[in-house]
Length: 257
Image 1 (cartoon, helix red, strand yellow):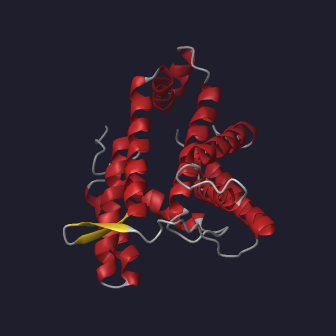
Image 2: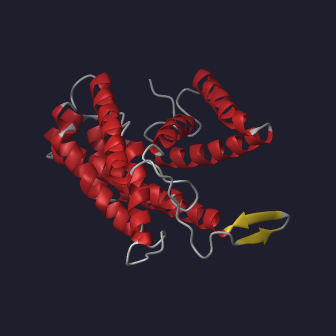
């Protein structure tokens, strides 16, 4: 929708905290089972954020929305720090250390189910965007907002729903990473950087590209880690630069005139 959402990482952090509090609270809800609840909470938050804040400047120059969501990200992270402090928290389940063998490779069950659920969510999003009336309205608005408005699309509602769906997916991501990463108010920052790299690698505006870009980034990061923990991000960013230079529309995206 031509909006750079720097606050996406903060939404991921809130999704992780949602799963954490549901896990340690009276319900003791498994983090994988808490995904629908985290998605619902973040959908509402993102929807309201767009309608009340981002929508006021959505037609402004790109830098304006960039700065607004950047400020929002800082605000949410600091607010989380006020309420939950900077203590490092984690979700440790009964199966956290379990794994299975796939030939010579040992695969943790948590990583396996994280991959499966992430792939299913991506497939569901792709199906929604291509097979439903609302998904087509979102794509039409992103292509030509004036033509979509003339065709009867409620553009303001579409923008808010798109932002809400983005927030819901961030909530799901937060639940998934809560079982593998430390949970802190600033944990979302690193995921914002990864998200940009993945989006550019796969191709902007392309759901399939996001999946391909994520898998490619993960493989590159893993091979980079063989050189040393500090090299994995360097290798991934070098590959990103090469993609920008030689295939700026992404691995899956198509060149446009």
